[in-house]
Amino acid sequence: MDKKVGIVIPSLNQGAYIEEALRSVIANKKHTDIELVVMDGGSQDETLSIIKKYEAHISLWHSEPDGGQAAAVNKGIRALGGCRYLMWLNADDVYEDEYAVKKIADFAERNGYDVCYGLSHFIDAHGKITGEYPVEPFCRTALGNRCYLSQPSVLFSRRAYEQTGALNETLRMCLDYEYWIRLAQTYAFGMIKEYIGATRMYAQTKTATMQTVHVEEAISVLQRYYGSVPMHWAVTKVLANHPQGLLQLVPRRLLILLLYPWKAKILKDSRMGKKDA
Image 1 (cartoon, rainbow, N blue to C red):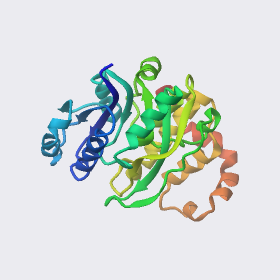
Image 2: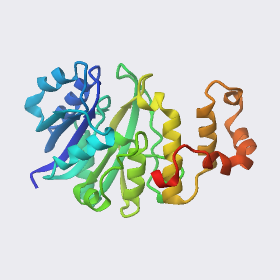
Image 3: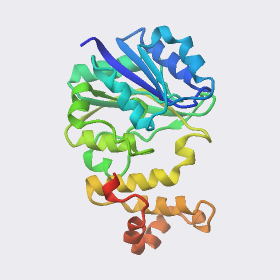
């Protein structure tokens, strides 16, 4: 194989942040063997001028309409056919430091893991650390309750990708969560207790603006792969559907008790069905 780690940066109108993402990967290239591709969905802001500024460090980049983030990642991975390990970094996220990729790739190689993940920070629009992603030790059962892996801190092997298949391109928000669940059907995940990636949280992120879609997709995914959905997802769905209602003032534990008799109806009414996951 030509390269140790292949990294895809999917982007769309992230001109305010993509330079930080690119510089983050380029810094990591000093310490490990990385091939970088950028799959842009046809940005209309300053994204393309920034990509061109760093062309010397990018093996391949495209800017054209695509089918969304999952489609962009799949397209990028197909272009990274010679890489032993794979990662993707959203255009508004960064790696923790210039040794992050080396640390997780070496950990995977040293311990024979096909999937590895590390710790992760939340950062704001200015790159300031605001919190910590709730990462947990690997447990297949627990993964059916919550997503405890932070996407920019996950690495998986080319072999695992080829066996598991591509990311689900029908998903807009839970493409990573659904993929971790599929990977976990075959592989045990290695957890490295080092900070690898940082997820940027700000008002315009998909996570902040598409909560209802996120919840509906998660419910659909859990129904498909686990056959059941924890009650806290039903409560989250109700709250997402009533962001300004009085329910927001009720303690979450009490809502779980109050809404439990209607759990089946809440989940059945989800916009996405089991067949769509």
